[in-house]
Length: 105
Image (cartoon, rainbow, N blue to C red):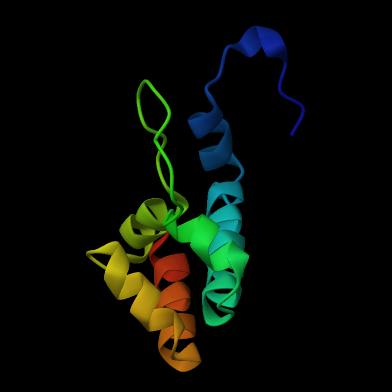
């Protein structure tokens, strides 16, 4: 699709003409979710870091979004605790990821 830069078309219109959708965000979320499941099944330092249960003070300013909260929203798990509990059962975790990928972002 040779589209000139002077045509001033938006990304959405180009995607519609190409009969495709945005895939990058869903691929990133899927990889984050599989990594998160892997880390949560192992109870090591990575587990503590991703859940944010480290001792000490928080930094000043606006708090950053946690990985687990973003994944819980994407997986429609409700609370982040439900997502953590779902990682213990691989079949349940994989079906949650598959359903979220089907629905898109």
